Length: 219
Image 1 (cartoon, rainbow, N blue to C red):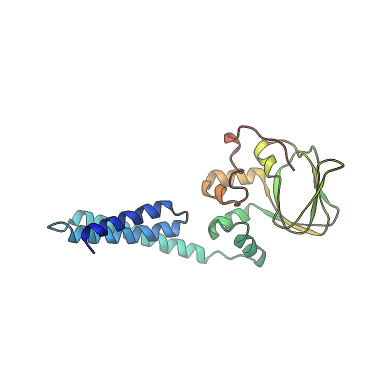
Image 2 (image 1 turned 90 degrees about the horizontal axis):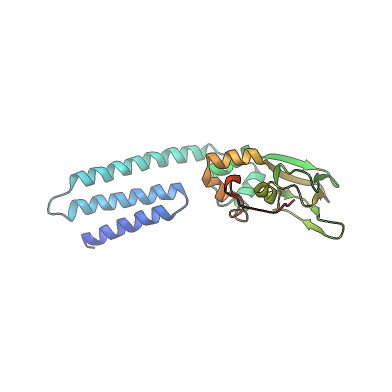
């Protein structure tokens, strides 16, 4: 392998590091790229470029320390069986730390059958995710839709600020997790990366109120 090849490989790895979403992989790829670049700066010139070598090694040390801190923080995160299931399905795009932050602003609820928790025309203040159960959405007297596990409710009201366009009630005993709008907005403001990973289904919907242009009401 030529010295020129080392330079190309290092820069390809730097490019890959900028493209990956996970911070852990970004740091791992950056370390490998820095070490290859340090090797290139040692062998390619007539004399080793020590300044470039030292800086690449310095960046490698920084990323190594950050990886250690990240792994230490991840080791401290633990989820219940329900939370593990949600993370592995609806929130698989999030890191454990990001999902932990989402859980902290959510509230688990157990509702009895025939409980109306969203009323048509009323102000909606929470996004709900049905974890287990069946809910009935009534748009009008003739339009009724049954929804089951993994369904989000209230997301359009989060965007538009409009009142609920339909009523939602439970058909069976239902367990859901709810996120107050204001708590979510503060979370997204502090952690923009969480907004895009909140759900693969909602990634293009959940945007801060300041950036929305228009929308229609929804339950």
